[in-house]
Image (cartoon, rainbow, N blue to C red; front, side, top):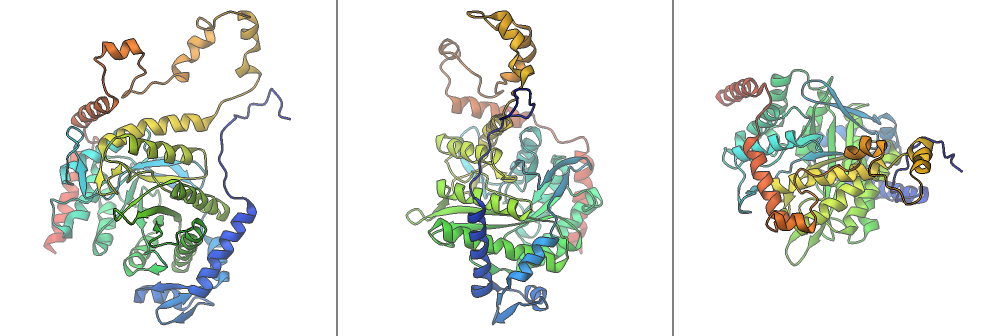
Length: 478
């Protein structure tokens, strides 16, 4: 029995897999890799695996022995420290705490005033990065869209420049044109110096599900690992389309793919920092789109627990892609994902804000999610239960039928105990009527419009932009 004087907080924690489940998932994944294998679509990828002990080949398909995977699990770091762009420590991945990011590689931007979607322009990119920088619940800013009003052969470079200039937070970098990836890293080095000793930029890579290691992913992995950059290796599964319809089959397959990414990284360089995770979405055969549902969230939790078992940093789902804007549909998924992340072993949650099958980005949804994450973290923090927090003296003094409204401790702690949203205040019936019976969605949109209108870049914005523009112009001239 725990003593009433214990100061250990009471915290809600969600666990999913027991040790037998974990063993069965691991064994199934090893069986897939040793018997079915993976297709390796590049000469560079085959060279990485050719000299690895125990790997056998059938054409372009590599079968990977369990021993090689176990070796990779031994050499990969269990914790990756992430810094902001000014070199200050930000957070650790591998500690079991959830960290959230704004962004998704959306093609369109949803206007918070009209809900119309328009092609994602550079000015949308800039304002969205500043929004992520301003909202305190977000720890990183990810690539927030694919810039449509610039030529494809330079759009990724300008996206990286806008991210670097408009936030000081850590970055998750997605580069669409794999041929530009190394130039994007060089741009970061030009603007911020050494990107490895205090890593602030985490490149994000995807293999092709099911069981394909594509050429671009290997190429980018090698570049990142050569620079000692931590990288995210994350697979996107469409349940019933690119993965089996059963949860068990999908979990075993996606876990196997992650173990391939881990193994590749450790063959390239032992001790390379790698962050693993899955995005298990469902496929709608009627609408020909993807969406999240409880099955996918369960698989995301299972993936997080597998990574905890392996002692590896984790990157998980973001509850986005669903909804038509900052609406009831999207809100439910934001709550489900972020609450689950905060009370489980999920860690990096990097892609908050996309809607309409991840094809559009909603800044109003990001503003709403900022509140959701704050409250989910409050719930996950639990509360103290000891003699001091119970306050026997206060209870005795006030006694039966008394009121705590005027107690000293109520005055001391009220503001911390009852934090209210800056966006959606608590309204009584009378207060709601006095304000003209507002609709929550309208209040959220209006707040978002005003917030975006007043956002400014960091103090060094002009300098970073000038140096970055010059660097890109030199690349183009070459």
